Image (cartoon, rainbow, N blue to C red):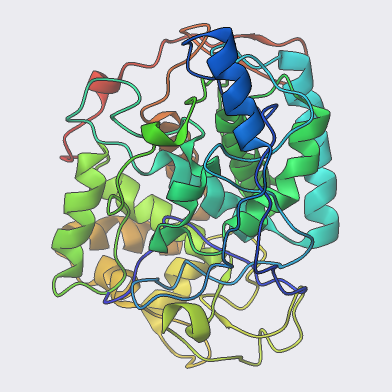
Length: 387
């Protein structure tokens, strides 16, 4: 994997992305101005009201197969202070349960009309996937804290194109100001999997947002796509998050969604018989035939490798080559129910990594009344990588 490997998937867009982005207003959600003096705060707000430009994210030699093209459409406003929003929740407040439910319904409608399942999965994974279990302090440990809304992190090569996912979710964020960005990203990711036919994911909410770009993690915490030793690299990165071999393979199965675009990642074909007509913008190289359906076909197709129009990357091939990975890959190729069970657990675990919840036990939203989650998230409970 010489290129950057995304923790998730993307869907290609239609309209070209703008070359500049306006700065966010001081009402941007989930942030608090430094508390110096009232005058200093006012001056800071005034400065932030001016426009700042953000160049459209281009493909980088480090961008991997999963950092794919997204739907490019109307401008998303980004600046060092994050996405703009006309109304904001208090930074350290838990998300409103009723607004979470309503936001979920709006996300479902968005998925029905824009076919953006892969990029929303990728957005949630990339916000959470910076977690380092060896760092105890929040937010230095990274993880699901909404930091991906800030320009400095959006500019990381692994996050190329994710500004388009933010643009898709911004109207929902503005409508439901009582939902934190950290929760919105994870809500969108889980809903996308479920709406694509995947398993119900046991999610909880109440994640607190970081307050500013200085709290973003450094670049380089996400996986690469083609290192000399794919198995060792995957273990180094995912063990650092507290994930094990079974969870690495289960999460790899999410590649059943999405396409790679060589102009961004350097991987795959410009188009195949499965992608030349879309949906969304045509083109790209998918891992599966039905690349908007969540099932276990990824494992079947990687195992058989009979179709040159289906993508197989080094990190894909290794799950059937490494003895420990292979046990789970073979199992999932034969048993979709087992894959769905393990994937749902791994996705939920990933979505909680590094998060600070308020209330500490989190909030579960179901079709009925919202209720507290039964167990408080404790980072130390996660394994060191051994299954």
